[in-house]
Image 1 (cartoon, rainbow over the protein chains, first blue to last red):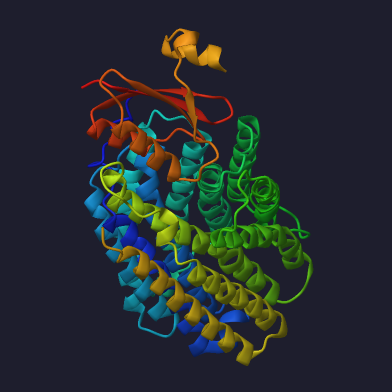
Image 2 (tube, chains in turn green, brown):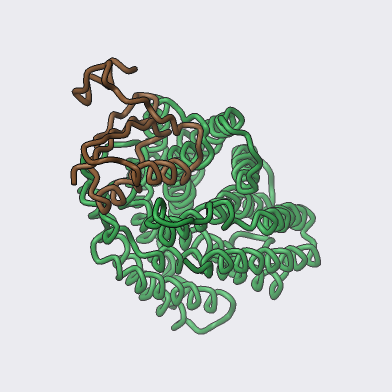
Length: 426
Length: 87
């Protein structure tokens, strides 16, 4: 058997995923600074520019950075298909970072040209990322549910990029899209459930088994999950096709939210419940600090549907802010943080030591893991999430700024942990 | 299981080597164990190992070390890998 053309040379150099992973703490730092500078303004209504800046510091600065870095690493290894022009990843990284800087600057009061520049940078970054990676995922002969999930996530990223760029024009001196509320709902659905949820689900089927020796779902279960997710990502588009004849009792955006229900059920109920069960049944139950993040993130996922119901039924914008906060920093952010603590030492071990195994003594991967710093990171991250929830519910400015302080500490701890592992000499 | 493996790898059942069970080990320990075992592999010798999943990152290392391999994927997601020294 051969490896689908994969060789050590074709696997991406460590510098590629590492540059994205090292930017994750920068995204957390940006979110912390926004909270410290704007206080409760960034946690009071999802329509406030400060809230949009905070949300996208999380989605673009933290989640997208980690997920794009992971896709560069996983596509050759899991899909058995090397990404062509891998070095372009450095351009993707640079443009993504510049785009995020321009986007945030504009939303926090910068000139309109900052947004136009951000749109150009995001367009360049996404083209340079999606074309080669999409090509690698399409041509692979590997037919696993993980690969299907990766394809779905990347397709969702392409769609949310188009919608997001079109909506961002409104902040750059252009006009906002017609049916803005509906487009926001579609953008949100594809981003959280398709891009983030699709990738978390796909990766969990590999990682939970590989790194934690937990049993994984049967293939038929995975297929059902995948099918429901797909249905829930397509249905929100229907109100766009159907025009605006719904009567007065429901808005197109609410209809799109209801259409996303099958996907929401999979990503925020069935999948987390199943993985939590699998983790509890893992074969070797030794303590692993990174699992604390998985358990907390999956538990936060289970809160998403009740919060979504609160958004639909309860008055006031705070529920929408709470929804975004728990989704980004509680569910996806927690899992991302935990994965970085486990994957970065694995990659360092793989790139620097695996070739020497059998020829000279090499350190174990666990010896590269500073467990205490992972635990500290968990306490800081978890405290930030909980305090953020309290700040949103109480609408207290000082609590919002204190949350910013805790996120700042989380960013510093994560950065020092990643640098500690990446600086380990071979 | 041995019957399937013997048929898949075309090795008579009574000549099958002991299977090195690596399923209870977390990544990258299975790779570490198998690469150490491979350094002691005689010419024309072979190793049969049961992994918790298909060990894709291992294969480039086997290739670099002049080893050939075949994979039997079990429906439970685990994989039995036959490694031979060809040079």
